[in-house]
Image (cartoon, rainbow, N blue to C red):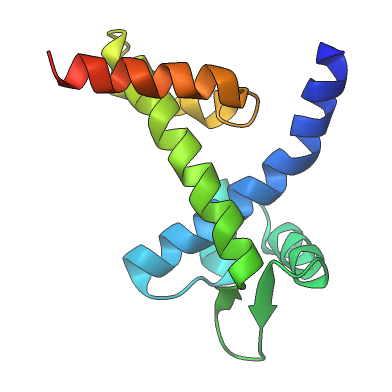
Length: 132
């Protein structure tokens, strides 16, 4: 049963990473372009373009010629949920005494696989730690 959960998480983590990155680029630069996505992910522009085309066909992003990439409401929701999970896991790891660089790298993987039950406990721990 846990293997199924892991396989399902692997199916969605690429989508979540792209959507979260597109949202982040819009917040930082005011736009998200293929060149920026490829650069941030350390991949070829052709690879980023192919994935963005898939995201567009799935209704997560909108693209117009010579313009940046925009999240649809569906894409915004997933990006927001993914960022929230990332922040909870990252803060939890920091609260355990993990250095920021390691916590950021580990949170990037854990955020896609953590259950809602565990995530709620992590968030509760973060709140308790903050109030101490």
